[in-house]
Length: 170
Image (cartoon, rainbow, N blue to C red):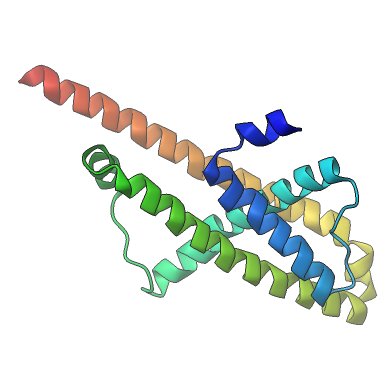
């Protein structure tokens, strides 16, 4: 277990594990759903997964909504890559930024879980199919997360090729 914990980066702890634990504790307090685990090993994996899901909600829902509302200023990804090479602090600032986004998504998710609980009480068919609904939502969310991550990889590859061609021209 200690080997597992030692392999977690600060990014994984602050963007997945901590939000997952906060989500589980608060969801247990405000809903009838029970997320807290008595088995610490199962708990760590479950909390990490819940934090991962919440983080994806932040990336796929919260960030785009705040961008559309012009609440956030953004820069092109290629500028982020170039600037990160020149200023090491940008990576740290980006991690902190992502942590805040994940906590916004954590609290939004808690509200959604509470609304789901209330709707399930009012519409029993929803409560009867909640597991299927969750699986469909998770599938959809991770497909879009995969596409988004893939676009970052492709963008970095293109940027690296462009940069290396530019340095060969000199």
